[in-house]
Image 1 (tube, rainbow, N blue to C red):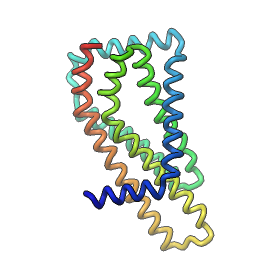
Image 2 (image 1 turned 180 degrees about the horizontal axis):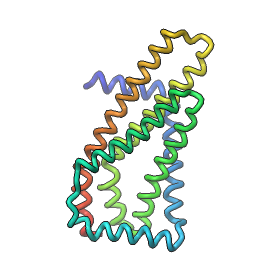
Image 3 (image 1 turned 135 degrees about the vertical axis):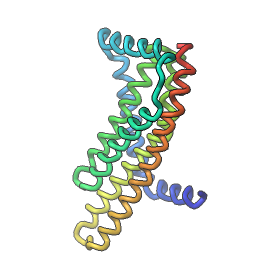
Image 4 (image 1 turned 90 degrees about the vertical axis):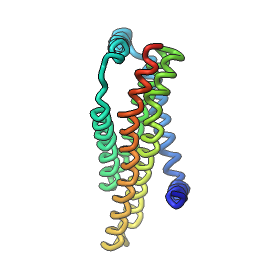
Length: 208
């Protein structure tokens, strides 16, 4: 376990610049999403409120299928991971990674921003208990996948003239294993979203 932590810390240190860039892009997405939540037209705002109120009023009577939530969560997160990994693998399409990270931040910012704007402290508590737990793992994993993809693409571009088959294959294998490693955390996040977050949701909704 200590070995794994040391390796992860070393990986982050060696790619700190990429981590800072992608973190900045994520934060920019969160800010843009939260601002968008405040700029909704009255009809759009009311439609969202009606949907949320309907969910809140029925959540206690709904038998949440945790395995289905887990499956959907993992599927959606792995789709995002696949886009990032392929964008890095195809090299010239690695800017797509920046777009995916920004969009992920935008969704998070919009969701949390809308809840906070409309429900105040109660919305903040709901977001904290229902959205934050899985995203504590999802966000670092997605950013790490993005860093891995950009690092791979940039390395290939820099060494394209002296890249030999064996060297490329070794780097490709390392890239694939790194992607699979970070995808493992997305599965853990899916477990949290499927089996833990619903408990928090049912716990807090009666007070909203």
